[in-house]
Length: 296
Image (cartoon, rainbow, N blue to C red; front, side):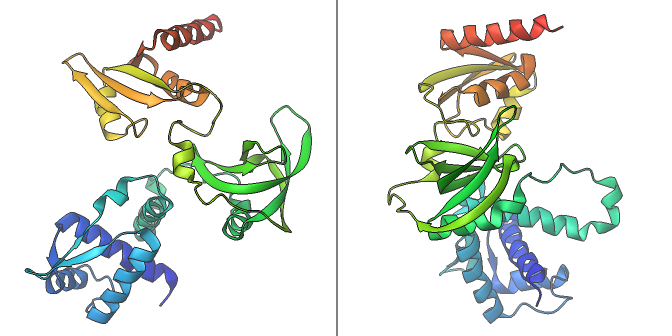
């Protein structure tokens, strides 16, 4: 069986259990045949058990069986909504499966461009996995190109661009955009990865990829018009908490480092968002808006 067909079956099992919550094997098999997942053939229990193991290994999704009812269910549904690689991979493959089944209507679907810099992903992931140093060529916007040896720590996808988090020779953590890399080579030299390093924890106090020394702040935003429901369905940050809601607005709080990435996101929503606290951040936003108005 082709890998694409196997992935399609994995995604079907996950999505079906998400939709119906709990199903016996017989119920799952009937839906499998109704949807012609395998050209109308039955789902064999041995194949299902192999798929369960593969789904857990690949996506971190645990499909368990309730002893009393013999119904299968997803035990840890929360992993489907986090920021992990497994969640992203599941989402990507699920979309891919839908698009593959929708080839007949491709002219009626408008997509965004694929992330830039993906040609370096293979070598970067291999270096991250084996803890090998990388020799990279890099050119910042409006700056001279340079070459540097770095220790690759993690990858992050943000706004259709891939970024590499790496430790340079000066023992400083730096972010490198893959679309600004001019070359990448894996060296023979390895490095020792800190046992307690977590990419999720490293970025947890930030929005986006800028990780400078901006102090942590307790930010309160007031969402107007359409924004409350937008933020409820697509939170700006994992620390988002809803404080108060009225017919005219809703207040949300965040414990975050308000870097340029975060302020840019707030500006992107124009008059739908208002910064209430801290006051220095509110004033900074006012100045940024005033500078923008000067250009018009």
